[in-house]
Length: 413
Picture (tube, rainbow, N blue to C red):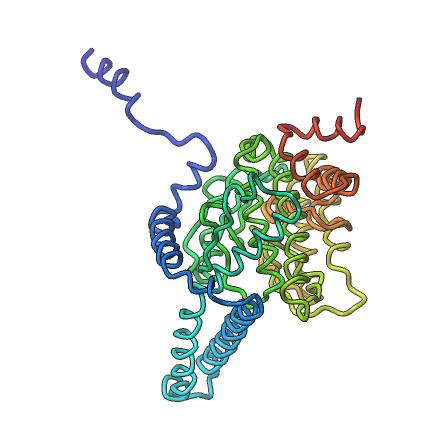
């Protein structure tokens, strides 16, 4: 009787993970990203940045030049890092350390220079994003709320989990950004086998905490859009659409597509105003923003359209999954992955998790990973019907379901 009594009364104190994010998190011991530590360090950096405020004494032209200097030095740094990696990967080099000594000295100098320029470059870009947002009326009392604040940083990877029998993101967990490809693939496989799910570890370009995290890319056009994209997430967090981000897959897509459209538009305005010589659109396969980055790709032949082919792939996968043909869908995706590889796109996996993540970014017409999902086209339609960016953003911010958006657009009674 005592054993039975203890069994009944004590089992309530034993935690059993039932939700998918908690079940997947059990595989991330010692590699889950520490946001608390990062945020504390970021706020210290921002405090020092605000206490100096040296950019306040520069003219607009000098500010723009400082930002361009930062990105030029960062570009040189990345080139040197690639050169060092090539030396170490060359089997004909007997002593890579000695062979790369000059490059590593150059790398150290460039790192110092980038670190010196980063605080002012961040502060200037924050002000510039705030100015173009204010010009679009996205302010309260003349101030962006919340104030634009971001930090250049190395980012974590995101572990995406989807059921195998449907495309739906059920977990998005951030893990150590220093994991090698082998380690990432091993993590994907462990979680997939243990939970019978589809998994993918993806690189990300930014995260909408506060201050927002933005990747250290040397592409100024892309960075301007990402900074604006992540600020838009902060803006929405204070409103119904952002509060309900995780409620349904449709609301997640509405959030991400809205942020991408606003980020793209503010980013273009920023470049046109402050850096007109850089006013060039990125290649199609680089037009991925914020929590989505492009697949690892090399230039494909002009006749190959990545987005069109990926759209066709997603539509067919959805059809197979609706018919309950999970194994056939997975075999088809593997065949298509090899097809994309032959076209120069080095996707190490193409599965349900891939579509669950990338399909939420639907700012561009032409399909892509979202396939026939009606959410992205509806958000884009509202932007076309909205007279201003502020009208679009404030209308989107008020929705708490996809049905509300459809009714507003007259797409359903």
